[in-house]
Length: 432
Image 1 (spheres, one colour):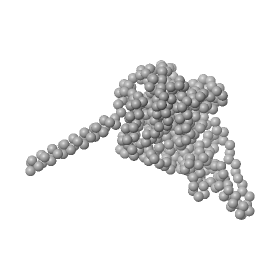
Image 2 (tube, one colour):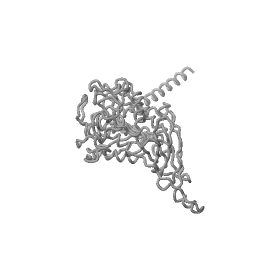
Image 3 (cartoon, helix red, strand yellow):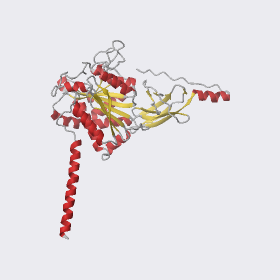
Image 4 (cartoon, rainbow, N blue to C red):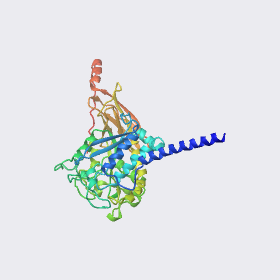
């Protein structure tokens, strides 16, 4: 009997060791090494590995290739990556637009790891992945990164793309009516990505200071210290404060001592800081449904690898809290009398001269601060309806449906009844 028991325990221990070995082996292949930076080849290998290890929630996509033929990778993380789910907002992070500003690139790698490894076990992460279509681009400028040098805190080597263009001065600009720069391939790829996907919220991660900056990035005068407010100025200030307040030091240090920065609360209007014509955050806001801010993550652009763990710890909660803001405001759908979706309908909020539009399946998302709003939807070929009075709270977005009647259908009905239809004209909202 004792021999049987001993044999049983031996078998159990061997079995446990095999399981433990497999667990440790699996863990070792997924753990991201925070003691070094990932160049293009190692980043590519890592992203492919995660895509293979988490096929239920991950898709690795390429937005296109850089000047030097490197992929602009974007990792999609969501519970149903092959479907466009009704009511699910799209979110994106973009890092390393300036190739020598590297902290954004690294913490986005860590964020990919964190979301994948904690999905299904961490309630917050699981909810975020289940309810959000997340896209993470660690590097918009992989060519520049390959030229940059570790320890170069305030230099410019690797900042620009392979054609020596600053990508954050390369987008079409509302205040630069003549002399628009030649759009680079990386810029054109991002323009296509921004305009052809229904992103709702985004952040562009930079380095060289410690502040969350919000639109607009430039002004008519192109002068320094000129506050250039977007129509959604209060909302943008709120979004910037969310990141700064959740970051461990941004709201406390309020900038970098070596630059004599002073940003109260760790936030600033972009143009008030300095004039940036052709920036990506303004382009998102003016040419798509996406609200974007720019986040400067570190006083040293390319710190020593020993700083990477600290930077991840400083930013982790801020990255998550900012992503959760995509679920605030108002969301819903625009449909016709039969319940069929109406795409490209303008969602108009009274008092805010900036509209968003419904997407192909009729869904829309409109980020708003808590408060009372009068909201309407207008679509070409459809009769106007009375505005809806909507209360926005501090929690998840308020759900609203707009049901519009086609003008042709109304004409048929009113003609049959001998009634002259009264068509309301869509009000003109000034859109910058």
